[in-house]
Amino acid sequence: MKVEPDNTGDNVPLLVDTETSPADANSQDASIPGAVFNISTTMIGAGIMSIPATMKVLGLVPGFLLIVLVALVTEITVEFMLRYTGSGKSTTYAGMVGESYGKLGSLAVKICIIITNLGVLIIYFIILGDVLCGNATKGGDQVHVGVLQEWLGIHWWTSRPFALLLLSLFLLLPLVLLRRVDSLRYSSGISILLALVFVAISSSMAFYALWSGKTQSLRVFPDFSQVSVLDVFTTVPVFVTGFGFHANVHPIGAELRKAGDMKVAVRVSLIICVAVYFAIGFFGYLLFGDSIMTDILVNFDQDSNTYAGRLLNDVVRLSYALHLALVFPIMNHTLRLNIDELLFSRENTPDLASDTPRFLCLTLGLLAFTYAVAVAVPDIWYFFQFLGSTTIVSLSFIVPPAIVLRDLYGIATTKDRVLAIVVMILAIGTSGVAIWTNFYG
Image (tube, rainbow, N blue to C red; front, side, top):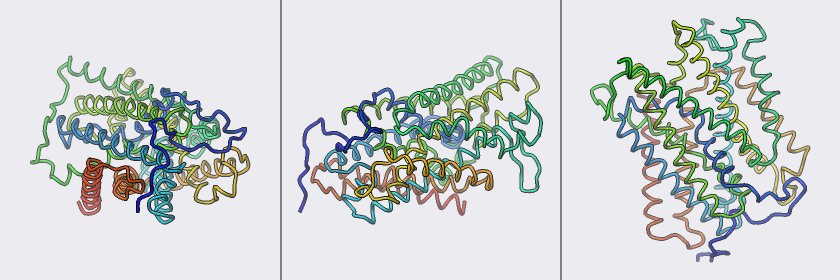
């Protein structure tokens, strides 16, 4: 027997009203531009540096088509989430899943979000350490020197632990202490601007190389004499990781005035991200060709024979590092909410934003933990690849279709069910092939 939806109007709020407190009064006054900044910042994260390498594998035409396809699937799955959230009484992603699949389903989603966001935050710290302080092999040989070491020399105050500690205290801590996600809209806007700076620098260098006749030949389609069909599948998690902002749908949408505002913000954000991804992929590939590395930052990190070239490389690396630092608080916000939801009952405790001791303990504890792990374990890239093929795929493209197929409120159409099945099959298939290739390829 299907449960009838509680609300059928077009203006159903994304989240039901909760008891207001001094910390969250006027909480539904966020703007669409602010939501666009926060959503776009989440999507334009660490994955942008891997986009040019996917173009080398896929070729330009399939690469662009795959970006558009993943963006369309993202819009479909987010629309599923918004519709079922508006029809139920859930206030979080895990709560929405719990309505359809009970406590076990809710627990699984919480664990996936915590593992994903915690892993991403640690990796952000590691990248920041690499950019600022360089990295070394297990034998101690320096792979590359960081920006601080280039400028100031190799000293204890330019070491990874000290540099990341200063970054945590003076940049990250003030941002993660903000209790509303909409308060991060300005830092998110700066983060997007920095990503555009990287696009501008890459395109300028590519046009200069084109003018000088030094650009690389580009593949329009995959060259299967150099790559296999399985290699093509390994590019999918890169885009899935980039577009996988689903865990942030509820925190961002909860502060908007109307449910329809979130749909508009998502569509605008997807358009922005498709344009940024393709621009980075095209110009990066045009500039470096087959010499492009898995992380294009490594290409920019190579020694230059001119002062202008070295300065440009430093600008690229520093802008990217600051971009990641400004993405950090958005991911931390969602992680903190889900850990709190896992540890504390919503019925028996006040809202996290209004409970200062609980809020500070979680915030400071998470920042200290991610910092410590990043300093102690500076290389967990395989873990990041695994995340893109498992938890992020599940949260983005498996769980939302599963909710539609369960259809607790009887609101799914035949088209919805067909789309849900197709999306789920594609997600499971490509994820399985990518995992197999990463381990055995």
